[in-house]
Length: 277
Image 1 (cartoon, rainbow, N blue to C red):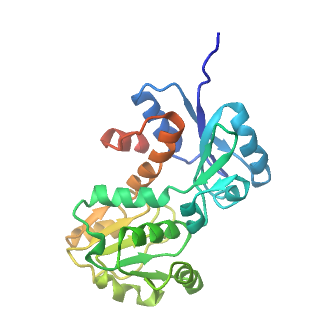
Image 2 (cartoon, rainbow, N blue to C red):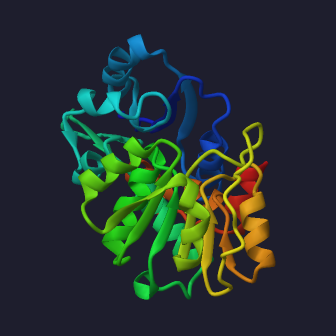
């Protein structure tokens, strides 16, 4: 008698104990009655390649990848999707039945889906997007906004060279603005996005002047701790539509779960509650 293998998935990071992914995926597995497990795995950089290559033999069907391994796993994978190449990082691994490893990036999908869910009236073509920060998360946001049809991205970062690199990689629809001028371009944005860690619990405040916020703008923050950052509170007080960062975390997990466990999960109130537990 052949006994079906129980599919395994997990999240690889260093550190990884803080990750909300295990409780999120456990919620979905329980909600849909799926026999499977999702576990956190602390993997040191020097052990990454051996660990990833061994996982399919242990029954793993895939994994999420977090800091500091998002770039390194692209060198280990047999195939890397075009969007992961464009972003320069992978957050999702799929161990395929033919033994090969596929690396993908679903951060941009998570961002844009969260934005549409939280601000259903937002029209990508309604005007420029102002992006604060130019780190790794920003690359996924830029790629998704350009693909959605945003006419121009006004990008500002404390270290200008990182913003210049994004302009070089993505083209003239990305316009670099000096960090000291960030407050002056806020009023131009139909969409304002904070991709920095400023405003997160334990981090310095975001000190960009926000008096230029227009009430018809949509404002979102990739931070979800706290759930309502000072940026979102200020924007809400100004009459803007605000979208918190938790939804991006939830939506970016959907494609991986579907590939690994064969069921496309819903991101609903119960999902949010499970992630916040």
